[in-house]
Length: 123
Image 1 (cartoon, rainbow, N blue to C red):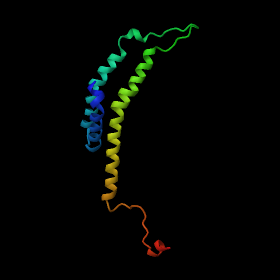
Image 2: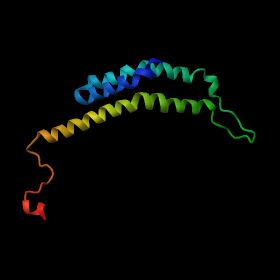
Image 3: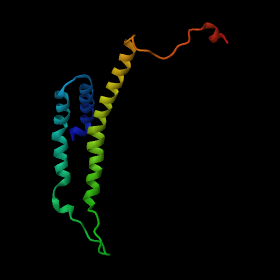
Image 4: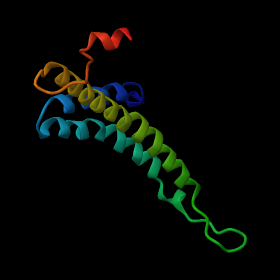
């Protein structure tokens, strides 16, 4: 339950750390930190396996188990929304900010074209 409250903040912090620190260690921690709460809650969603029976309809066709849709909702919200999306936001925003700052601080790179003709501005 605590992962639902504090997980997004932890994942944003891990995404920022991955974007700003080179090497495999930050990426490893980005996988290991959410592993326990996500796997623990996934076990609750998957078991008991008897809920995964494929029921037959009246016309004889096989329908998808109801548990399948619950599990897909779980993956969307818990794994995607609480774990992956905040990490991507932290990583992406940090990389974007570093790119913008590097473009501003490097005078050797050409910037946007500027007008230097004062007569063109007055017209």
